[in-house]
Image 1 (cartoon, chains in turn purple, orange, yellow, blue):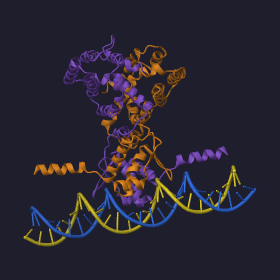
Image 2 (cartoon, each protein chain N blue to C red; image 1 turned 60 degrees about the vertical axis):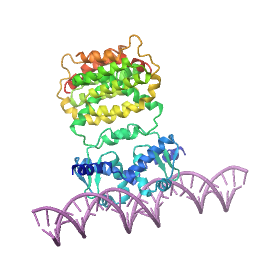
Image 3 (cartoon, each protein chain N blue to C red; image 1 turned 90 degrees about the horizontal axis):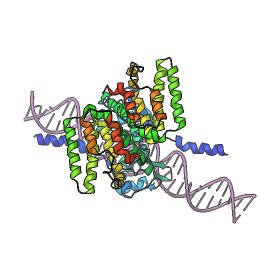
Image 4 (cartoon, chains in turn green, cyan, red, yellow; image 1 turned 30 degrees about the vertical axis):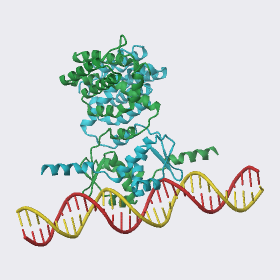
Length: 231
Length: 231
DNA sequence: CACTCTTATTAAGTATTACATATTCGCCTA
DNA sequence: TAGGCGAATATGTAATACTTAATAAGAGTG
């Protein structure tokens, strides 16, 4: 019977281990009791006894939360809730993973979207130091003789933009995503950056010096157009 | 001695458990052997023996990777590497966490950046169905009598934009972040959406119907200006 | 010969126990 | 009172035994 087959196919999805359940229990516990960073969490043995499972299982669940930076534990003091880095989870999953082409492309699109939309943060938070830093990079780029040096400038320029945006979470997001885009470098090097009509880094800096926030998005769009056209 | 103090202060940071080390070993193992999704991973006992640690420790490490969706394990078949959802880690850390105001603000900024930069994806991937859906939402919004109904339309409208962008990773990102922004609803309800000069949802739809991609970013900027001004 | 039913094997999931290690606290002594 | 020593405690690690489920192999039957 196909119905029976379907049921069997559903079963493994619904399957949860004790560790999964304990993990969820702990998450609920933290939310419902509205435990704040710094507050203590029950001892392993207490949790095990309360939930009627082995300490081993409890430790697996705790180990997960610890990896995400949600809790910290010291030898006698017990465990405390911590304010986790929201991007930690993303880092853990992206860093060691061989992403397939499809996902990598989506992440690259995400980067393009971010850089076009970055303008308002930049204009509200730009400082003279940042602008000078961009100037220096542009100058370095113009003097560059090798392709490798030019690509390094390219990366530096855009990284500096994220820095300028003054949003730590956003910057962290970018830093995590960056290694994924290394594959782009290959075809990046084949692009003609001096092509007529394309907006250069120097042009972008000029706009940033002005207070013309309206000009930024479309300038960046034109700058990234070679990439955008690949969508 | 202050040097000694410094050393003591450094010690707990450098401290790593066996489980941490095993976790890293496994990550390296996966990368170096360039194991692909679907490929099998050594048995728990084999790993334990190879690294000279207890199976218990190995299970803690594996439990973490399993949570992130990097591996799956079945009773006899052993464990296999899986293609993880890149946003899984983010979901795990954001959902149950009481984020502090500072981080929440940064995530909200991130959302604004995304929506302004979204244009090119939208224009390249819009379909008639999507546009009609937006039309329907705008119409619903105009007929809405209660504030709650209007907010629901607001959420629907912007969610639909992410859907239109045709980027699953981006959409997932948005879905995860959405609950964080509920706090915005409060002061959102105080804003005057009919204020003169502000770009309405209807205006945005009109632009999307056209093929004027240049007009989008600044239109969206104006639409979001009440939020942007809060930066 | 094919086909099903049973059984054995394997690897993950769970439980229990014991011990190591480090940190806190309090007592005790100089 | 200060300082050190030891007890208590909670996490980290190890070892072992058992449970459960899925696969493979083998036996028996049409």
